[in-house]
Image (cartoon, rainbow, N blue to C red):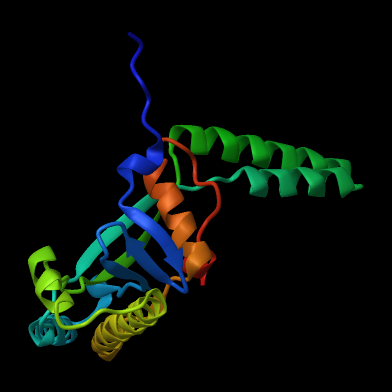
Length: 215
């Protein structure tokens, strides 16, 4: 019998992305922050020590886990080469046309042998709501019977509470990193979708760079 190919969604733990929040299939919530870098090697020894101590103090203030990760991606230069080609077509000076053509060929061959890699730095902040066990739910159910409307209202209230808890963590991490001198920005829906597209398609050249990572 031929093997059945499972859809990609089966291997992705994400249920949906809404308002900058990643909803996992197992009820967990995640937010992703993109962070800037520091030219650590250009700092004096005293400044480096201050940065390291500040970062250590920041980590010690957290009572929850966070994840740091670096996303490396091969840059797609096709659009740039197309723009140079259009410029060549508009150029009236024949010598400049030849120079543009040679430049484009040099860039194309250089990138073919030496791919240009972009790096972006991220922090993942989790919040996993404490779920009641089936046994506990059954006991509570003996004392209270909720209508479907009430259950929906309770679910929405619980979701808002969980989002608030997640946002508090985001604010704490953002404040701590900014005190060290690191720029921090939360990713929105489109940027999160693009990030996960790149993560789950590592064999492809970057489809579209994160605009926020270019700023």
